[in-house]
Length: 423
Image (tube, rainbow, N blue to C red; front, side, top):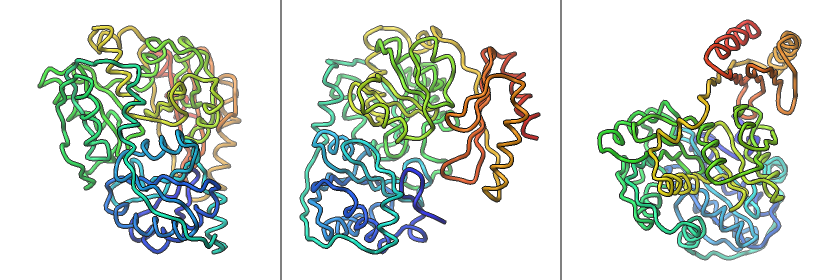
């Protein structure tokens, strides 16, 4: 399988991504990135820990001044690259199962997509120059930065780190702010628990039960590398990411946001929305110009433009806790202030790109009669009752389908139309 993806480099360890090719890929990354200094961080996966020294060696032998900031969430090396106006490299496979690892390069806090890195890697022509290796700890600087406007948060909070890289730092942050924490995972553990380590409703049952049983104020659900966050209210109910977005917009007084085309149309009731293609680099590109307060994806990625252009689950968790603390309201009562979201997504697999393209063309022809078509990313059909979106996955041979209705009846009708169009 090709390990050079649309937005990063990712594969199964050691079959696809291992010590040997990680060394050469790191040399290609160092050859491509122009800043002398690079901040290196890594998650706690077996594969990530296995390849890290080979990654360091590759970077140093191609002239980089490597600052190893150790194991932790992805945001720490990205934050360091942003603050220091330098480069960053994260060894992580995000929410993929435990057997994966990956390499995610950044420059000044913004994703570097790997297409040009791949060309250098394939050529085998790397920069030959000996750099240096040092260690540093950016945790304190990062924590101070994301909590700079918050004095205290006196809540009882449940945290599910999924055993990932936020396992230690998340409770530390909230304890410093004055909260009491109850943890599902007390130590980092990347073993496969039969679920992908991501903040989705299907993974929130255990956290919800813990919050309800212990009468906590809220539950925070992190993904493995910490750049996404989900929430459950005090009743243990998972809060839809689009409702979370509306809460942020209202209570943080945000005006201009970037949302991917798959996001809920309800966001338009609360902010000026600019739609972008799905994918981290597309949102970061718009956010770095400073015109937007927030970026959001349906998968619980939240980019707080007033702080930095990249997605940060810990910052999202801190800001949501601060909202609850300042308002004194129950989480469930805040949720009731916003429209209920009727939204689903699904996928259709294809054996070839030609088949997928043909199907998308057929869908566009069939869907014209149902509403106005836009093609920012795939084919989106929108009318007064909701929308349907059909787009090609950037990472897998799938056609992604998203659909939303403004109410339960509209949702049912749109869902039936999706079935009719895709049969």
